[in-house]
Length: 197
Ligand SMILES: Nc1nc2c(ncn2[C@@H]2O[C@H](COP(=O)(O)OP(=O)(O)OP(=O)(O)O)[C@@H](O)[C@H]2O)c(=O)[nH]1
Ligand SMILES: [Mg+2]
Image (cartoon, rainbow, N blue to C red):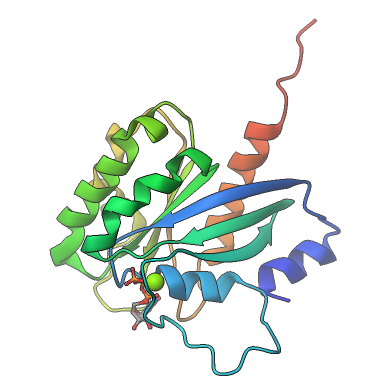
């Protein structure tokens, strides 16, 4: 059982909502490593590798937070695979965009790719919440969340809730808080509005 699941079960939070979440970001941003850090450990898995190279086929991972059971697609961020991202947009109820916050040189590319995702008709028409994980916060020189938000031009994103959280797949720091924010957004989307009398 992973940390998030343990905390969740201690609090008696059985998942009430299930949410498909799409995990995108450039190659080597740390998507697979982050999802491995989030998933409950599998005692039968032998020698599972963090950040192991993956093919183009997306992997599914499962984790829970704040009463939400997330099913995550971990899609390759390799340049040749990015054209395949759009296949998943329609089914996504939440989006996690992972950025290597220490890779200053490729921030411009990350920004362009994120802009393309959000402008796609299957995304722009829906208020899918966006969590940006500023990964590799353990690396000296990694941009803090406010600076990363500026570099990605997030102030211009006004059609959906978004949040930037510093995270480290290596240490696990920041992950729980970031995912808890996303779980709140998903829960809010599923909560019917109160009728005013
Ligand atoms: N220092 C540090 N290294 C990390 C962190 N997260 C991932 N890495 C390393 O970064 C490299 C890439 O990680 P992956 O998880 O494979 O990246 P990815 O985004 O899944 O890459 P693709 O599958 O190619 O799109 C690996 O060597 C990881 O060990 C982190 O938080 N801190
Ligand atoms: Mg990967």
